[in-house]
Image 1 (cartoon, helix red, strand yellow):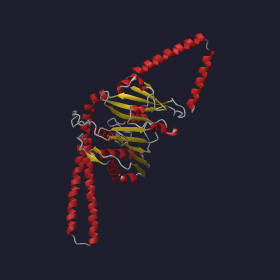
Image 2: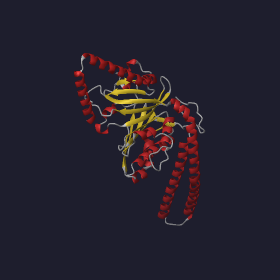
Image 3: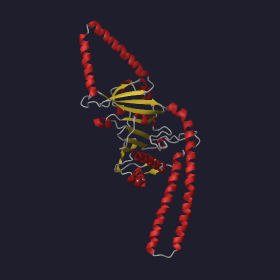
Image 4: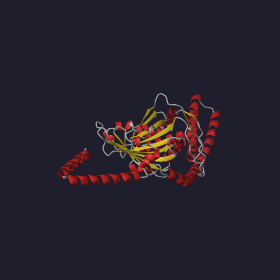
Length: 405
């Protein structure tokens, strides 16, 4: 409202000034404005970042040369619906954001295959003030595309080699330290079970002891699975592909972390379609990704809150969104959140979301991150309905052949 008042006063002053100008002065002012316009357009088109401005009809209002080249857009792109060129996003959701929640900055990794294979960082920056939707043609949001392909290819081997080495050493140490006591506990548990079988006692008491020992055995097995899953997740490995039921994986992850969720007084709301298509993926690694996302949400809500999990299916992806009511994310945090060892927590390692991104990318999917300081955060895992190209770095950091299309 304050911005609109300032703009209104500016236009009033501009109109008053124009009325006082004579013909020659007016011509001079218009000439200067046209020169400035041409100068600014030159800057706009010389930027390496692709920039697209959309209006509140979801139509392209402005587009610079870099964006045209990135997506092979013709001169007729201006005025077209943005959804014509970017079908993987729910653009109408922008129109439904209420004024009180307006202004969320979001970042995504975007992979395109036409006109050439490129990796892009995609930033969506809403207009400073939510436009009046009753008026058409007002700026709604600016889309910024940064081509990170060359940076990714130049740094990937070095970063991945250092990261894999550090994580592998850490994982090996953790596995060694946990493996020995777990094995010892397993051996002692077997001894107790054998001794219990030989003891003379009331059948009800024996059944109770057996039940407790069986629970201990299951928990030890679960701990062993956690260690193995951790090792499997942090070490780049080939995916073990098989048909998977996303609904089962999500409910299994929630059930597994049920006690921790209850301890933090967090309400979980799951909204899934009646039927989600069967996907092809690695169940263990995707489960690890879900664990990490849910764990991140729990840590963001130490005093309780709500975690909403939703699935939306379109023609290309199954979009899984995890929305928490925690402290949110600033623009700066969103920009750095997938960097190795970057964390906003005093006790965090900065590897959890990095692992999620690697697993999702290996499945040919995309990880989206949205947030605003003080208003929670949303993580969107988009998994393709059909197998896409999988780029995976094996241990040691060398690039493997691209496997699947």
